[in-house]
Image 1 (cartoon, rainbow, N blue to C red):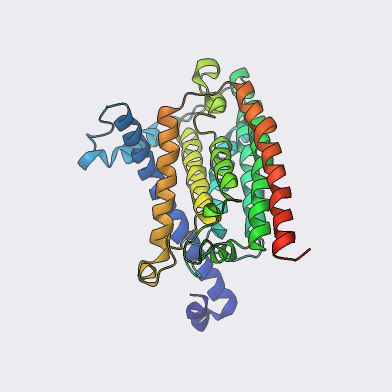
Image 2 (tube, rainbow, N blue to C red):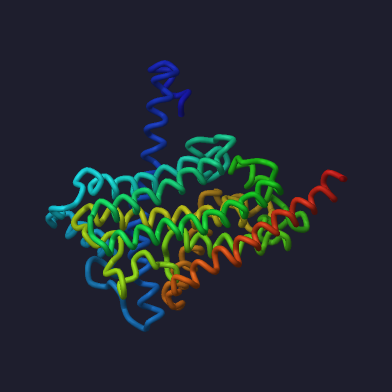
Length: 347
């Protein structure tokens, strides 16, 4: 695309226009996808509770999310008189923006990535770590005790599970030998028995795939780890004082992060845009469809867990992160690195 526009605008101008188009091709469908997965989320919960869910606005209720968005948009934005006005307004913007930025390095297919950087995995870690700032700022700037308690919980929760996620990613990097997400996907081609695509089918990496899936639920604050929004003791958590579009940005950011974690589960352990089996006829289907199918599957798992698993207590949440996942993932780094030294590098 850059070469096409460079013929008219020069290289710098062509690169700029191509980059803007690439950003829009990711951001606009992503925001539409967020609206639709909110609908899908509600339908899945309803089905598991033997209810009907959204079914009035539009055919099969498909326009319910857009109606909710319009309703929120038309509401008045209320800022508490004792709040820090600047930080109060910027916090939801940070949460929503960070949720979009991480998608820049997600490969949707061969050569279908906005920024094919060699440190893509480090970029994901850095960007996902920034998400907590929006939540902390919203809780502190509200100048209200319940949002502030929620912000402190969120900080502790995200730090706890980011440590485990970091060690899980180390095992993937050790096996793939690269931080580039596209190269990590290519290393999964025919990984098991020469024809099964995906690190998750490797007995040494499967436990890390499970840990990463559970940790990604905790990192995004999804049930049963939604202690930051525990209505029984915190009203609604860090977003208690928010209304109108400020509240909607938190909502969009949360689902954007959920989709991102689903994409990372698919990319790091389940072959990304590769088909499940390394069989030539399956490659007729464009890789982006395989990736979307895997993202939707993991989103169904997220919704399934939310509809069926009761919320943890906070001490259970911390114990799982620090006393189970952290020692397990740290031991697995030692196990995988030792195995690779003995087999791949002949030490």
